[in-house]
Length: 289
Image (cartoon, rainbow, N blue to C red; front, side, top):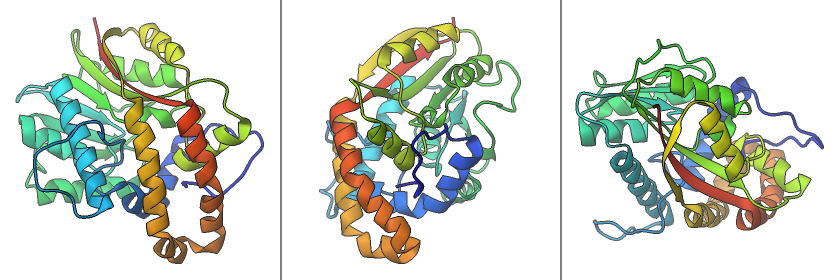
């Protein structure tokens, strides 16, 4: 859904292309995933609170549950400084600061996401504790060991040079610092059309097999603390996105026009079969020894 171009041999997206896609299609993600964050929701577990009254509200709650799960897994202290790599619209960073008292710096390649994230932090009266910067995960503008912990929630999917991104995360952490990373992984042998559609929807290169992703984490210098399979959640997320896209089709058509919307219409069934048959989703908790 994040591109309306076709290419028989698509090149990996550049950071500029990723940023432009989020600048253009941010409202689309709000409509099809919910507005509290831009990541896979935690559908496999319930939570407290009254029942959701719309599917969009249910999606927001699933994303908030997932964010809370990641906060509990990373478990930063009140005096820690956490780097959010690919911070999206700022929801997880603000939620982490609210729950733990930690400081958070978020980086994203999208100008509109930086602006929206700063507004979110200001609305929560957390501008002094949570900041957002336009920066590339492959060229982090920070000194070695500048942060106590880091996470990258669904953002490394956009990075073609995965090893370089991991080495940058390793560099800005101290010895013993933890890095929480979520990864889309590839299962089986998807068709070229399915991989191209994944690129269109997520502005992402083909996902790596699980073993290759783990190998790169070790090569970057990390050790594995925890590995968790959350594939059922990404399967549910794709189905919810499909329903919300159909529910908001008229609004999407009005905003993006018939040509782009027709390309999205064509991508939906291909994307669903790719997710169902070939996409995995894993949490890595890594540590810099």
